[in-house]
Image 1 (cartoon, rainbow over the protein chains, first blue to last red):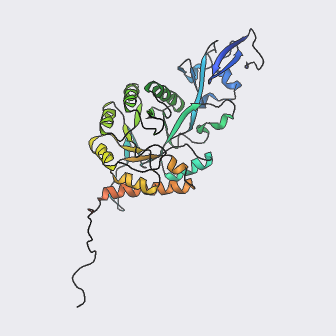
Image 2: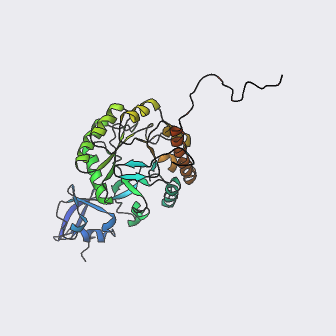
Image 3: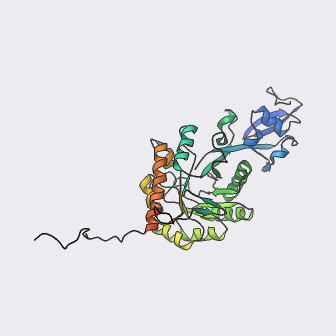
Length: 79
Length: 263
């Protein structure tokens, strides 16, 4: 399983903005692997990538690209 | 016929019927356990939820789907916090993807202090969402013309406020609420402003189809107790409306016979 690098930038990293925060993750990382690395379950989270909602059955085949803006959202309490 | 009171068909919104005329929110509770207990005590079948970023620094169990079963409640994603039509449409689509439901509580705010709706932006978003297949329940002002336009846009329910969100001021304009109910065909759900059980009862006595509330229950000292009170108040107000109240007059009329008094 591929996981995001915890250390500094390297040639194998790409830079993304995840929920508003700039992060570096391993190049070639799938969105599904990104969720796993964050301990999130695809069934309870919606992924929006560059303003497009990713279908749940597409997250395994979708690779995180340099410059991606990714939002991970879910339901919380509200009125 | 209901032998214990006036006949009352269930609330029907779009293709779905609800035994309860009370819709509740899930925000502001002290604990998730208290939220679930209060919602069950309220008898509500439809509950609103908000769409927000996952907090990546906290546990993955923060999402409300870990506490509320979509098989038990119809989850109504809202667009709370949105100030533009475009943002509301974006949040509605995220909510649809999260909940796998076409229902949305559309809310576009126009003023930070009062949280009053931007009815022009709400209408713009309603048109787009209805065309995209959403079942739009639109939060709006107690404004007849805005309500008529939202109905024309294809909203499955129109939801005028009783008073500002979270204010607990009750129905500030019962005449406007009644006129909206008289003039529209879609269900009218009064959304926001109810503070306590008497407010919910007065709201239902206007003849509207239902009430949506959150803070009045969540911010009560005992939310479960208040949820039960709201359930009874909504039922009482509905029954009183159907029963038809006596005429009010500013003079006393004796209830006991005038004749037969002792000489």
